[in-house]
Length: 362
Image (cartoon, rainbow, N blue to C red; front, side):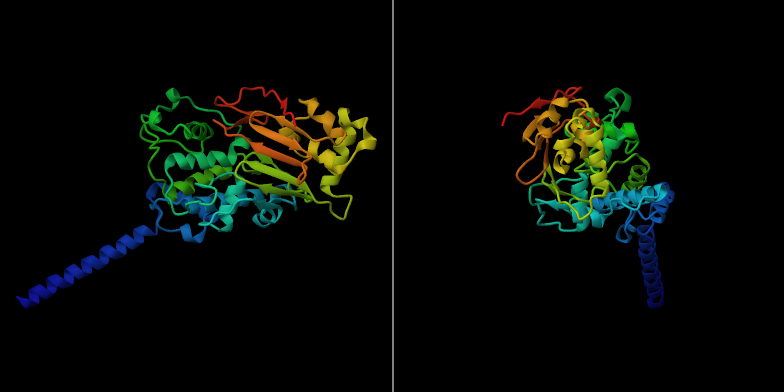
């Protein structure tokens, strides 16, 4: 009898050990549907080693931030190599050129700072990031679209086309991102639902990184201000809703910035006749961010800038101050109900297109 009991106990122990081993083996592998995608993303260098496990676990805000940052900078590096460019945005260059005017007490990792600079994430307050909070699917959609909306020039699939049974339950702040992420192919629902409040897993996150990598992208501070990596004399200060641009002259007059600004000033019809009034600060104010300021469309912005006079303009989705005490330009980004459809403005109800730029009295 005792021998039989020992045999049964041994079998139970062996069964338990095999079960633990099987659980550990499963824990280290992606689900069948995700295997090919996950392995491809790992081979491309998009997935940090610490996230190459526990693929079915919900992902956290901090982990998702690192995935986005890795994906974006791998993409920028490979695009620069394809084009034969030696000057492009790297994590080190961004952190050297950009100062943050906020600091998260609970998340000091460089990739969290970079994700904030990219506009992918925000804090839960001015000083807290909540790095270990698990993200929901509607939050994941928002972070993805926050990152890429300028280049993708978002459109919105209507509720009737999406056919999500839970569409009306999606948070109002997340609906534009859910609709835009489906339109761009970044993230979709399944089984007739979006599952807006469901947790997003590591393997699901990795799958969306491949889509993000393959989608159009323009490097933009806070997801709004496209900046040229070759303009090395410019420095940036960033807060939660503003970007300041300062000019720090270098030792050479033949830099990419100097050449571009001199050429723009002397070729633009509105400034060519004011050659004797040229200065780098004036040219930077008008032409370094012409995609946002649109001086060709809004010539009123040019007039005070030519003579070096301070001015402020309301573009609806942003306010721009030119010639401030501590910066050449200050962009104040307004809260929006949607994403960039074209460089002049946002859609989804705020503000109307085309933008009507208004001067703001001093």
